[in-house]
Length: 130
Image 1: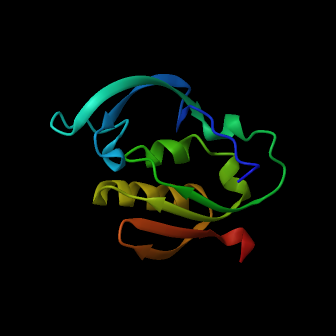
Image 2: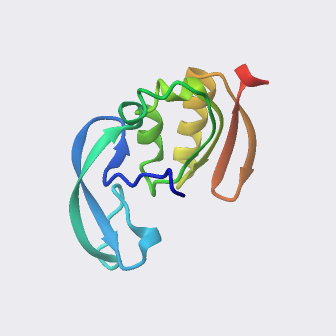
Image 3: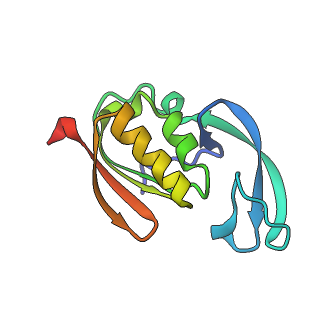
């Protein structure tokens, strides 16, 4: 897309610098998980809150997709202002514990309604837009 911009940062709940574990299999690269057998090398990557990247965004966001290989809840926690503008969220979960944490965060702290689960993804809709 001509309007897309690539920004070489990670997204999380605080501004920091984190070690990113890069696997020979790209889908297994992660900030959170480090498998010695699968790990190819690590790089230090700057982390920003999603809120800080989109703070000037005025319009609503129809669809937000989060798939960050184990950093999903961190991304949510760094998106507190943005979540008020989001209509639909699709977020990946990597464990049952993370699934429960995502559900609690979106339904109790925000007014999101659980819509559907598809394999390892959860779909929520903002009650304000129903």
